[in-house]
Every structure is written in structure tokens, then in C-alpha cells.
Image 1 (cartoon, helix red, strand yellow):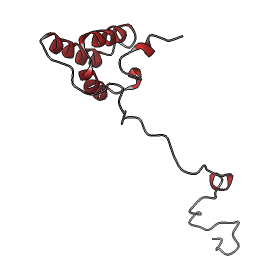
Image 2 (tube, rainbow, N blue to C red; image 1 turned 90 degrees about the vertical axis):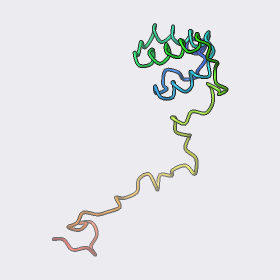
Image 3 (cartoon, rainbow, N blue to C red; image 1 turned 90 degrees about the horizontal axis):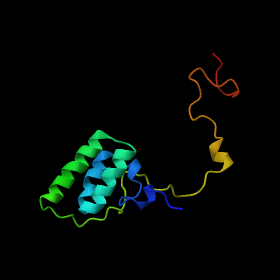
Image 4 (cartoon, rainbow, N blue to C red; image 1 turned 180 degrees about the horizontal axis):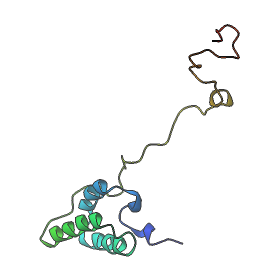
Length: 113
């Protein structure tokens, strides 16, 4: 079962910031942009987003052509998945780095006040 959101021309559309949408919609043709405008009007109705999309629709109607980018391309606004070794219990339960300035009462080598 696919939802209406899965049919959008820009993946993860609902979670992209307006600045990213501005560049991504430049890659869309008039039909794909009309679909996004309709979706936005029915769901979020975010005025800044609608303003940008309607302005782009006007540009396309006036003869502008979509840019050569890929609306489904890499999304730098999302952090990459973490890599590296998994944390072990020994590192997740490590003691605090800096003991209190008056000394650590559980350490007999430190002064106690």
C-alpha cells in the first residue's frame, strides 16, 4: 500500500527545510510541481513553501525549464548514519571525567576538604 506522500516527486518532502525545497523544486516540471502544491495545500499549508512553489510555477508557465538536478539526490540537511565501532558497556558507563573540585570522597588519595 503506497500513500500519497510516497507518490511525491521529492522524497521525504515533509521533512525538508524551505531552503532545500527552493532548490529541489527547480528540477521539477509543471505537473510534478502542481502535485506538490496540491499536497502542500491539503496537508501543511505552509505559506512560505506555497509562496516559493507558486512563484516557480509562474516561472515555468512563462517558459522557464526545469534545471538538470535530481530532486531525489543526496540530502545534506540530513546527518549521515553513524559509523565506527559500537559502544560497549565499559564505555557507556564510564565515570565522570572531572571529579568535583573539593575532591572525590571515594578516592583516598585526594584531600577531603
